[in-house]
Image (cartoon, rainbow, N blue to C red):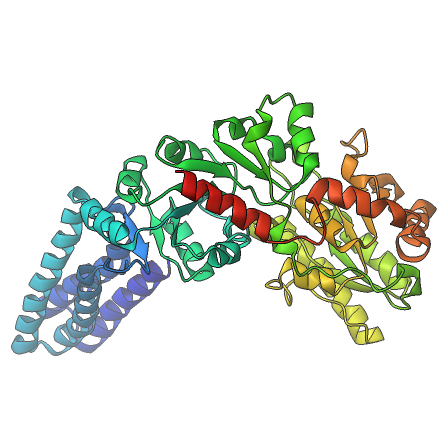
Length: 491
């Protein structure tokens, strides 16, 4: 759209300038015609190039394979069109024959470039043979995969540092060009974009032993069909959300889970998965999570991590307390607490949720100015890791989510906000304090915050609950790395 607006504006300027300087003449007609044609080429060349080729089989940082980029034809065509746009105004205004001839020659070059862009419609852009040869030479042992177009960066990012510890070459595979843009900055390993299911034929080479899956997406089935690989579902956290026990998990060879609670959750959901297909690995991402130095009641000005989940994708997953975070933040401020605000990564993709985030940030910013408390605003600390925000907090208020379970590793007090759709408190609330939406503007909220930040009567229960969900504490990367190395050696 910016290209279109710029081109139309420039074309109109050609007409106005030429008409003002020379009045109606053959030169004006020719110059204006070429100027408008050039404006159209500038406006339409990029959309035409995108529409004229299927999504490209491409790779970033893959040795021996070229990086994707803007086609040279597109760049040249737009440059020539811009030059013609300028010269056509000069030609129309001056009536100079040499200028008209130059404009005509450039117009022929521009037309040739435009035809080349059109021919791209019938041509395959990617080169599967070249890509496969580069992957064979690179010889990855592990493939980590997502077919999400957007919103998957945090799901992928939590596992990549662990793969670096593995000491084996790995390959990141995505299915959308847009995903290539957000996945590539997450790692120094090669990232391949294979848009079509058949493109995966070029990606799966003899060296690969294990495929890792970080989310539940329909495109997972395309890769699971390659039976030379051991297919492992990792997910992106353990929680009582329904996605944690999705029926599609049955198609994987192995399911890596944090602890015993996940095994039980599958059984309770009626998914009959043989016990030997589960591997308990804990939560290796939390190896550096710190436990408290003393009881929370001894902290004069506690920092509370306020971490609502996202809106969900159906009625059963509408668990977010984000709309109520202003009330929660005000209640915490009234107690002299510092608030660290951490909305779910997917909340940033929705305009309504971003507006709610901004309203909470504004509230915290006003109090920071007035009181001097060092509140952590969401936009200012969006890139902080979970472990960083965990370690800088004394307590948590969250929804039913993977972040809630991860916080168990700290053994710090937590409260769970429960929406009306949750009839029975989840098992994750067993060692925490419950806040229902109905309690948010009543004395019940004060009582829950007293428990959370002063008396903490659930403190003795948390170690057992944490071990049930996360395995032995403190978490360690070793179980994950050992399990993955074992699968590589066996396949």
